Length: 120
Image (cartoon, rainbow, N blue to C red; front, side, top):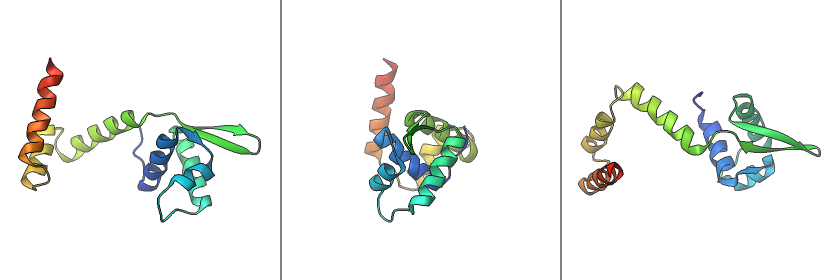
């Protein structure tokens, strides 16, 4: 799965939130500052070419929907991120955030509880 650009990720976030829609629907759902219509249309076309969305012709327009689930993209992205920046070690990832004080002891305890409960 190809890594998306920031512009593509922004578009995918809106597509995932709306399930399916037309370019105008996605544009209306985007936060300010909104990209120009033509820029978003090009971005969605790139996403279609990359296999992230599919377009269905309805009248003179295309209605788009996601082919990739958000959860699947997150998993693949995070796996690549951890592999590339933290030697494939989630422990190093958490240690990085702990040292940089981006995660508290309470949050770490919550994570430990989640892990322990998942094992049961």
